[in-house]
Image (cartoon, rainbow, N blue to C red; front, top):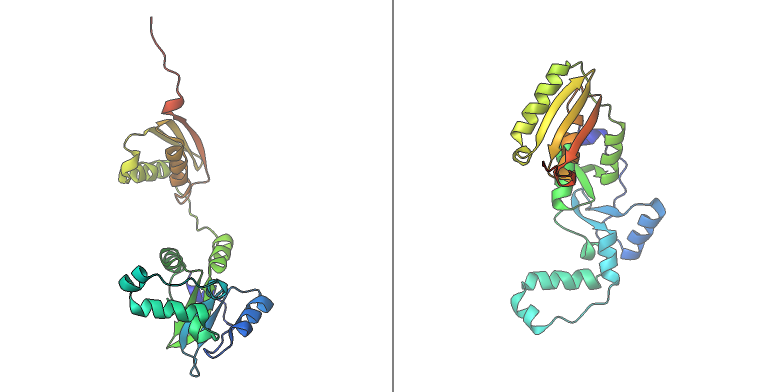
Length: 228
């Protein structure tokens, strides 16, 4: 699945000359937290978000002499403009991280997570054609059917063994893997609750796994047995 299948196509956009109070009103009226900013040719030039408007409302502190000495003059000028500007073009974030309509959803999700952005404008031939938000990605995840195929119990057991061998953090785990009627059973001892949970996740994500029977025990919780 790619972003064109989940993106919002009827995007509400505004020109850079829009007064900030009108941008705020549009966000409130339409229940959105950001607006793409486009020029007269429909080219995306920036994006304005709730965060930009909130920054505009904060009381601007005087810049100390040491910050003025060490900071980049361009950055100080931009901070001043964002804190005191009256039109969208002065407050908007630019340049904007964008994507094409054929970008796979998982790549879009990685970009948004790594770049810490809540929305990803979709551009085709320099024109804004849609926008994808974190909410869109969550909806796609919730509605996407999980691909499935018949996998033998031996195949499930082999895949789990291979996955564990590939991860270094499993080296201290003493785990016996079994599978029956698509249910993967995990028995043995691990170092922590985190590893126990992670191994269950590892098993559950194997294609063909119906469920996981996690009987792993935490080493620190075992009562030592002393012989006499």
